Length: 406
Image (tube, rainbow, N blue to C red; front, top):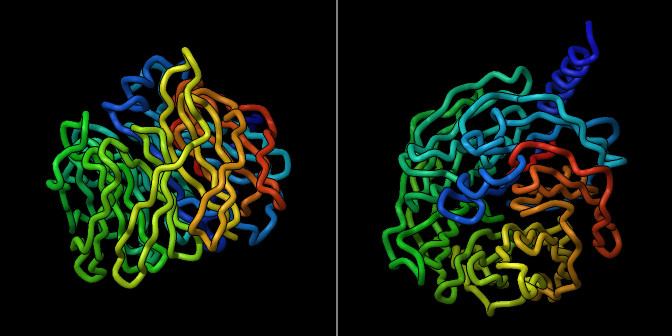
């Protein structure tokens, strides 16, 4: 048996052990076809929740890393990429393809760790389930919309939520005991308010469950609005309960909650700002605060910056933001029990156009998927001050738009 076969067998066994271990957090990030980070822009590259870092355990030995890509982009991938990383050194080693599926630009894992879900970011949008232990594709289901760019698993593990950028809609699919998806049970489209400045329609960019578990929030770049829904966990349907407006033209993209559950941080892609939001767990109402700096102001000749994604450490002490264009990661101190962000500075992202960032399960590493350079870079997260220090060499992966460490 050759070395490649041995490595593949070893990683299969590792995935099986990972699936049988304790619950794992869902991860997140992605873009859309008519934005700076969609497949059209990715074609020029040589090669996308909720996001809470934890210190629950220290990993030993290699761990799986899944990579989302665009298969339709020039030089793109063949499906969900498969790699492994060393928690001690951050070194990433490629292991081929987990599963072949179209444009899996965003990934999330089931809370039981047995199944991974991918969007299929096509005009006729779909979501696909893949069993981790044997790489078996469990099937795909239509989202009923166009260009799904984000998905997340409801904490109870029974429902998959997805956001369609192209149609500005949010879909709900049931998850059976095998991890496979059933036919869609819910679909809402953001028909109001009207599109913001420069937008031609709604563009749902993220859908995530609030820490209270009762409310689902959908961030829409096109309407400058964050919608709050209540999920009927019996019928799998969504009922709107409130809307939170950003300032016109902000272009909200990604929301991350503070672990205290009463504040969240919003990345505004279009106007290059962030905002602290107050959240009421009883009503699901979100209130968007004043715009703040990303710390990634364009310099002369450098072009625009597009904030991508927030992460918040599990102790709520620090927040990190990926900046595409400026190609940096901003670091914030979280103060006043989550009510205030204080910018501490930025560090280079280690690649071009960092579209998505994710913590390792133990919180010791932060991974950045760099779309235009086709790389995944790794950083050590300082336990005391939250400093980010590059570790290992950037890992080459075609049009890397989502990194999901397990």
